[in-house]
Image (cartoon, rainbow, N blue to C red; front, side, top):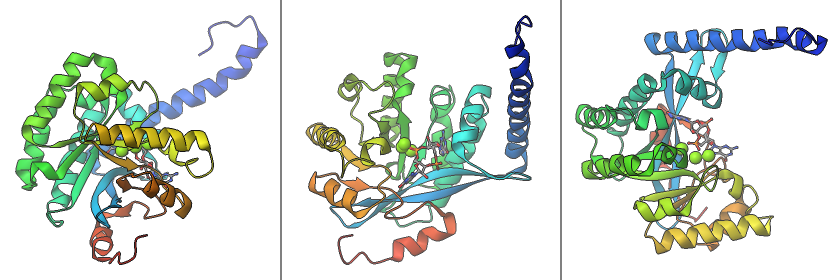
Length: 278
Ligand code: C2E
Ligand code: MG
Ligand code: MG
Ligand code: MG
């Protein structure tokens, strides 16, 4: 709420601020109910390995079917879940559900799970993963945890301890949205990530913009030198795919190959024969 009443302009904006605050409070209440009444589900987007010409795994993406609003996207509700701490409970559900579904897939197909910084630094995080693996029977190497560079804002030493803890269990670690935000190359030196996911913002221009193409090439080369895999995020057309293949990018993910699908759609994608390189 605007504090100064001396100027008309503040009064003018007051109702809008109230409306935003109310909407936000309602979203919080609705999220709480969503956890309790099971309104969440997972979609899965395939990650296609260009060298092996096969689906190497799926990324689990959280979906919320709101009782009155319909589908609410994660970019709207995840930040609220993070600010309120609810992401810890939601993330625990995601981890269990992703492992449960993936356990029914072929053994050479992995599942990737996004993990928020708050969830990552929660004291129970490692226990949550161990429990999800134990309950589902999923082999640890079939689980890939996706973190973003923002987790390092908590202090690098602590984060490295946590990452090595994951490595001890045998789960894989991917660095998501690479190249955005607070990226620092030193993170790549301090931990042997299994995979770097090149942010969609670079892929969008990869076939049309020399600068974007140069950055993608540099990331792919760097990853190769560090023995890390790469996945290009948000590949939307064949030109981008051709360029990425030429640059030696290992995996692609994006609408061009497939949109995220319901759990029931995973088997159909896996049974598709990719005779011709896409
Ligand atoms: P992300 O982890 O980078 O996931 C990729 C996002 O890009 C997904 O959006 C996916 O649907 C979208 N995408 C994939 N291919 C394309 C494409 O070709 N073009 C375009 N324009 N978009 C594409 P989504 O599902 O809306 O998720 C957004 C973000 O929300 C995710 O970004 C991730 O940061 C977060 N998120 C999603 N599920 C979870 C979750 O279970 N836990 C946490 N902590 N975060 C999640
Ligand atoms: Mg991700
Ligand atoms: Mg990403
Ligand atoms: Mg992204």
